[in-house]
Image (cartoon, rainbow, N blue to C red; front, side, top):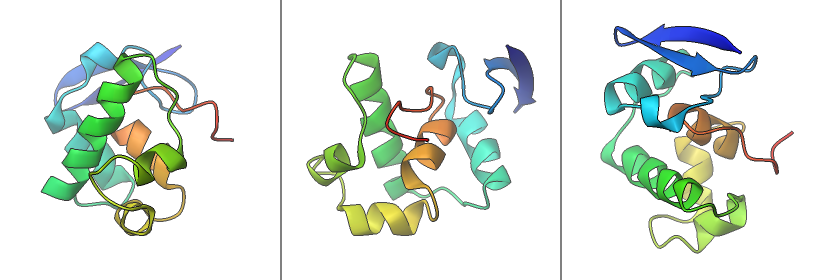
Length: 103
């Protein structure tokens, strides 16, 4: 396990930079991680990040399909907000471990 400092807070991360303790996450940290990923966060970004965090903390499996049924936004918009690997980027920015569905 490693540690990284974002927004003046040191957090526990794995070798890929994903949080190992989601309770250490803050919106200020999310903004810094997003910047590293080349993303400027908007209210729409935060809406889907909050949705993913809520599902993860409830013990639910995260998947692209669940985004489509979220009522927050559709998959096409999700890909536009988090280009490249949307679920990986969104969970990393959201301070939750990488989903098992992501390679």
